[in-house]
Amino acid sequence: MKISERGARKKRRLSQAVTGKWPIEIWVDSVRILIYRTGKKHFTAAWRQGGARRRLARASLDAAKEAAEAMARDLTDGRAEMTEMRVGDRERFGVAVAAVKRTGIPIDVAAKEYAEAWELVQPASLLQVARWWREKHSKEIPSKRIPDLVEEFIKDRIETGLSERYVSTLRYRLGWFAGRFRAPVQAVTGRMIEDALARLRAKPKTWNNYRTDIVTLFNFARSRGYLPRDREVEATFVKRMKDPGKRIRVFTPGEMSRLLLAAAHGVKEGPGRPAIRPQPDLVPFIAIGGFAGIRPLEMQRLEWADIHWDRGVIEVAKHKAKTAARRLIPIQPNLAEWLAPHRAAGGRICNTKTSARVTALAKAIGLEWPHDVLRDSFISYRTAVTQNLSQVALEAGNSETIIRHSYLELRTTDEGKAWFAVRPEGSASNVLTLATAG
Image (cartoon, rainbow, N blue to C red; front, side, top):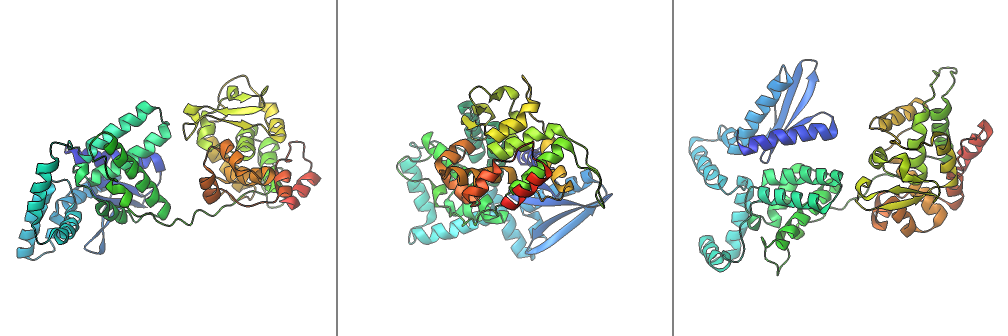
């Protein structure tokens, strides 16, 4: 099996493991084919070719994957495009594909790069300039191919002690980049990277995230001597996309109270409303998320021993934090009251299924569940109470800029006080008062 095929299978498995959703992505080098489940025993692979959308269907998922990988290899090698050409064009295209393949650069990117370079070096020939550059620099800078550079970079990040989540994200994004470019890092330009990112048809935030990781990779290459140290790396010239940010949605104090009380005591049956059984083990997850702002994945690593009652703080250790930076979060008085009945000497506070169960509970009582709603609520209401974004950034484990751009929904001081006054002993009348306060 070729390296590119192994890489494609690995990327497909990673895609399924990370998302658990359809469609499934099949990658071979720079070619992506999506597989959709279109029936109980019907799977459809779809891709774009020659400006048109193409499809093929199979009766089993394995057969669809096999057919998709075969088509992706044909597209990578240029065989699929060649069938649509005239004989003379087909021969020339085949020669071009064969000539470029050893460079590790996709033919469309290579063609654009050649045309741009040709214009820059006129009246000299591109070959003359390349030979001059080689004579001048070949002994100064060792060659390092992108796949090997990515492997070295990932190993360095692991040894540095960065979080598993961050390393996993790097593997995913830079794995795509290594599949797209198998050439030496010195041969990859900012224009090439932009063309590759454009093919992803990614949203601005995704584009910028990929760009950030690629720039970090190139800076690592420069630090290791694979790129000149006296100039900026090419990846920095890749444009940033304007990101409008996500739409922030927070719970009101009344909604938070309803959710916590439903988890702690359940909901009785009513007209047109089925009974909901109590699920008290969900209370710590909801309360810590809403009143301490800890991320769901961080909570899955959190243990009762991390709650220091005597000091009045929750410790998110370095190896449990998304950013691999230790932080301490004050235990608000209402949070202490919600956690007190569940206090334990040790063990984990929640598990991998808790988040999905809380989401289901919220929907069962008629609440929407926007992404990061508990964390967004904490940051927004905590900022309203403290009027100190720097302090909230330290507690939340993010920069002020990211919080302002991605998490903050402006709330008044009174709304913030009402949020941190949501307590377990709230009666029906108290819940009504809190609801109007939000």
